[in-house]
Image (tube, rainbow, N blue to C red; front, side, top):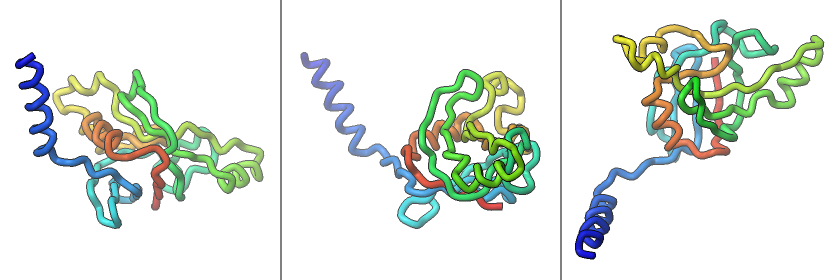
Length: 165
């Protein structure tokens, strides 16, 4: 009983001194600088290096074009990923994206995620940050596994994301 009380007391005291997690109310991604910014109360609360699709210039228009979308969307759901650690879904395509692709008889695509890197990269002598120097995804936004862990904790579902050139 005393041991349980001691553990509970330690947990309560530790939580009083723990740094609170500041949740993001907005996410901005600037493709030209390969940076993702979390905003809380109008201020940048965190920034992360990212990688883009293999064709980083221009907005995603069609499935398979290897581009990362541009525009305003929502981070609407998340999943654990065997291949990419954790991933958060971006609500691409919106109605405008679908209509544009339809004009050309094409699909706008989908399943655009913010995700981590393959676990095998963790054992690389360079770590999983090295791929952030290259654009290697099929249109998703990639970040180191440490960074996706932070973003996962700080960005609630429903948070708006704006992706700018």
